[in-house]
Length: 357
Image 1 (cartoon, one colour):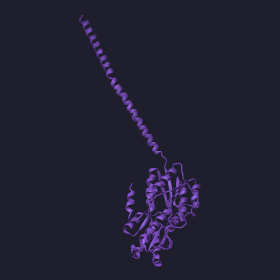
Image 2 (image 1 turned 60 degrees about the vertical axis):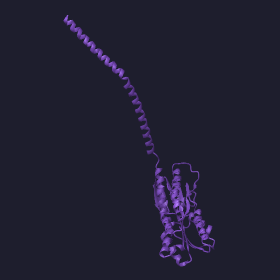
Image 3 (image 1 turned 90 degrees about the horizontal axis):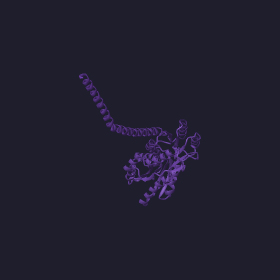
Image 4 (image 1 turned 30 degrees about the vertical axis):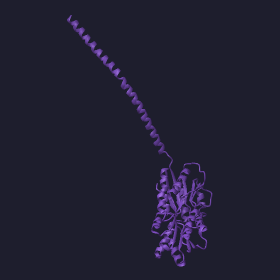
């Protein structure tokens, strides 16, 4: 009997243990509903995060695979204006995955022809030419197109239609702005005459001819404004200095020197300084508005310069080049770049302030 009671008690204990196990299991199942929901929510959030990561990675891959370009630029020379222009051009180029390679012909047509031939061998995506000469450069410029490379003419034309873009400035306006200064000077100095010497950059380039015509045709009258002589300075300060020194001997009445660039105007200034001349007795006018010229404006040795906004010029040119490289439609082959105004000591700061970016 006692043994039966023990067995009974043992069975009851087993039953109780099993019941407790079952109850705990049920409790876990009942309480597990919430973690299961949390697990589902966590899975959805992870999926969204993964999707976002995938999209970001796809975007990185897409940007990484964006087309890269190489632009060759054959400069006629590399004066202060070109240095500043290139600095701004490279800013725009970097934003559009364009690498720029350059050459400097030092105003020598044979050198520039060799430069362009070298660029063609390198097979860039486009070649920009700042031509030394309009006629002598025809064959080599046409060889760019013949090689299947887009050809861009900058600032100065070449006598051919075998190009994709011609980005030019109104060079007649450049000369007119110099003429305006001369005419205003005569008006402000009644009874006085401007006896002028004119220093060319080079001849044979349409842009230079237009600068000269823009000045001469709009102010030289043979009475109040007289042209005594004109010489070629090859864009060189040293050559302009030598020309001016000769003029001081040959034309003692000369009181005005008009130059096709600031570089040459600086040479004329050096000649006058060397001769101990009073700058109040002379009018010196250049073109470019270079930083060196601006310093001369401050000193009172330079009277005026046609300021060529190299930042705006470079920006507009490179935007047109970028569109061409990316295969966007070119509405017009000949594009006028508007970025000029006359800078004098009186308005220099106002002009520079307007350019702040």
